[in-house]
Length: 142
Image (cartoon, rainbow, N blue to C red; front, top):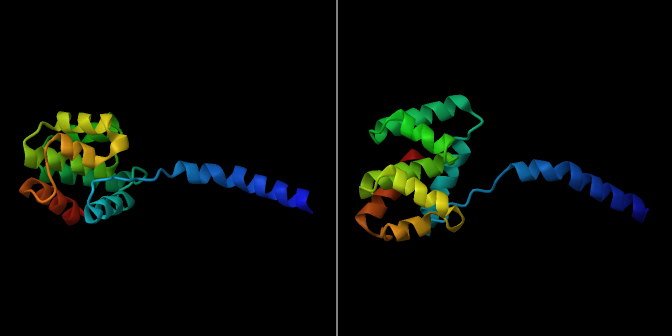
């Protein structure tokens, strides 16, 4: 009986493991729970599997932040950012005046540390007007 139970558990792990592994856990780590939750919700709403939603979202960001569409597409295709990461990149670039490629490059190199590390490197502190606008952009999108 124990052998049967052990075999069953191993089979379940082998079958279910890849299903769970394919879902990457998104942790924006901005240092702000409201902003983090908004970014998580954006990723749930706009995932790369829904081509139509992703296309509309890409167009919306290009229009809202007045940047060329190919720049937004580049964030998805070259940097392989999530929808929330793309929003953070364009929002930070917009309100801070930092070039979009610099913001994207900083996050790409510091993904493990999250957006909090990028904001710190760009000297954007919680409570500042720049930070509040970034947060407002994310909450408005969600």
